[in-house]
Length: 258
Image (cartoon, rainbow, N blue to C red; front, side):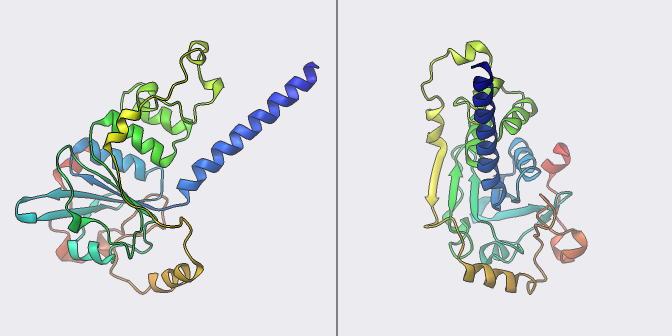
């Protein structure tokens, strides 16, 4: 009987591990365009996300008279991205599967700056830069593994329960006995007030025809600064960027968070 129970527990553990690996792999197989306001904490979080998931990271600053400043992260430096290139989708070699826009409280990204549906069908927003709810929603979006939840908790000095109140991907063996005895009611629903779905793709799978077209045209765009050859580096280096774009390539915030 004891041997049977041990065998059953082993099977359950294997199923849990395989399920966690499958759910994490789903987002890691996709490319996400993450747009963050040019605030130190938001930019730092974007860079941390880009180090863990395939990401096109763009920081933005909204100025007077609808002036927009966009910069893309190469993995080592920031380079300018013109609004025209952004809207045309000519700033990357491989387009994103989805876009996640982070907004400062009360500062809405104009509709004219939303990625057009011809190169990104799914777009959502998180309308706060307060770190606790921002990490909570980011973690849900990316389906953070326990390892990632724990890493971000320590990185931003926030309790794990605060950024992951539902205990997503936190297996029973990572919890204390008293945690198992707590109420199982869903927590953190209030953070959904900060989540806005702008549009969603009809299907998460790209058609073979679209994939073939994308593959055949990717190498033809030689001026694109973005690339996904490296795990998280999303823009080519300064040598591949037109000289006129490098005049204001490094925002002050990036110097403080390196």
